[in-house]
Amino acid sequence: MMLRLLLTFLACLMCFSGTFAQKKRRKTAARTPRQAQVIFADFPLKVSKNNAYLTDQANRPFLMNADAGWLLLQKLTIEEARYYLNNRKAKYFNTVFLQLLPTEPDQKNAYGEVPFLKQGDFSTPNEKYFNYVEEVLKAANRLGMAVALVPAWLGCCRTNWYDVQYQNGVEKCQRYGQYLATRLKAHKNIVWIMGGDRDPLREESVQRAIAEGIKSITPTQPMTYHAASSHSSTDVFGSENWLDFSMVYTYFRGKQGVWTPEMPQVYEVAKKEYQKIPRKAFILGESQYEDENVGNDQMMRRQVYWAMLSGGAGHCYGSSLWAFPANWRRVLNLSGATDMAFFHRIFTRLPWELLRPELKNELIVAGQGTYGSDDYAPVATLPNSRLAVVYLPVGRTIQIDASKIKGSSIRALWINPSTDKRWIGGYFKPTGIRDLTPPSLGNDWILLLGNVGKK
Image 1 (cartoon, rainbow, N blue to C red):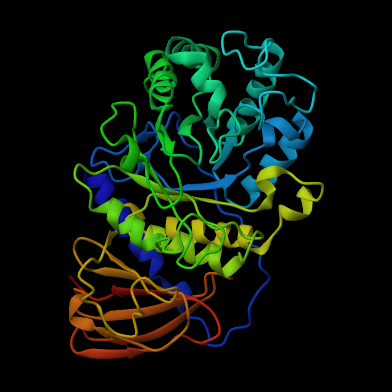
Image 2 (cartoon, rainbow, N blue to C red):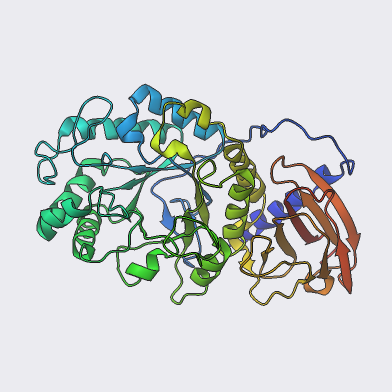
């Protein structure tokens, strides 16, 4: 416990160290994060004792920074897969989300192998197909990366493996889960994702059977469920023993082409998930992708900071890379992916696992934005109130109640989330209402408010 407290204190000191004493208008550097020391997780991952976040076996908090590479196992050769994984590792992604099987039951992987010798029959696995899966798992593990696998993607619209699972039946699905766990149990970097863009209806029993089959062999590999948009894992499988942590999935209000125009914002579903009893650690499993529909890099930043400051333990970034189109190497380097590297660096300098979302909206007294809109600014604080973190989706002046930050002297620090550059926003006593304005109004900002005086 003393060691954990010391590490937390040192992390706070790093956040407010002398490196912040930069000129207020320092020129923006290139959008490439400095290389930091790589810490390899001791897999398998597990849930913290307080059910708030993921850790490795040494109980070190694991901030999931995932990339949606859903069709990698179908589209890429092992050489291409290694290229992809190395690119993601260089951008500080520590997890990749993959569909274990091809999109449809009659499709093959890049080597012409089908997953089952008899099409759609879970009892006839093709060893050559799963040999390739193992090669990818090994490549990821060598980089210290977790791989989240979906055993059989349900799909939103009666395609994919939706009917096939039901036709296989409960007993065969359970044996399939046992086969996967037995075949892949040596790979401790696996995380399992059940479902796939769908709330379970008639297929609830077969999804449970696959999950229980896996857990009967590898109970320590963590598992979650990918529900339909605007829902979370616990909305549909809240009481299942195999559900270790939850995923929330949503877009934004007014998004076209989804089943409801009232799709809640990320922070809305995240705060709802955070307040559930009993509590489960959760991540933002899916949201708007960067280069699809109306997505852009600012939306990617907005989603991840909304999730993290509303109680989340990580997220999955998405782009058209998920399907590995012909230009997939170019898509690897979209600006939003680089922003996720900055996100990981910014948050791992903080005691992020101790942050708690502010639910009463007491810190910001003016300028927080409208709840339910795109401009809302979430706030998270440490339990001792000696640090607050604010994300402003749109740069603007806000007023804060300085008395909500404990300590003798408060320092305001602005961070540009697309460059990781920092500006001191002032020092003040923890009393009264204070106006705070970011260095520019043309982009989004992170604001750190913390005590720098004596205890």
